[in-house]
Length: 86
Image (cartoon, rainbow, N blue to C red; front, side, top):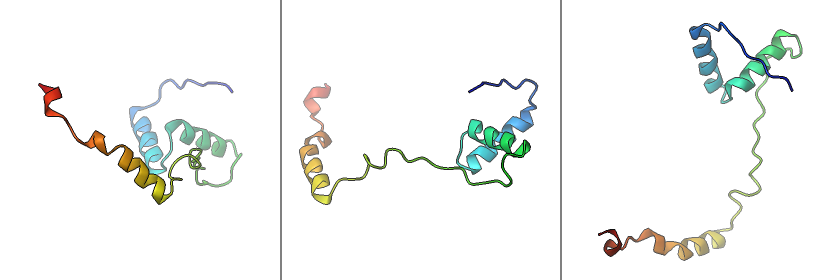
């Protein structure tokens, strides 16, 4: 993959790119790549950006029993020993 540095970009354009990226929940880089593809005719219409959730298999897969066991095992961390903070 090649890198590209853009010089002379008006501050207002950069602000507009950042705002649009936030609106589309994407990075500015991802947005610019999509806009370049559109400008070159590689894509016909503005498509939704694909969202990757690669950690779904690792996160949120505990059973209720697992979550209860974890909470019980870490309950002691909720209490502060005032004697240690003198």
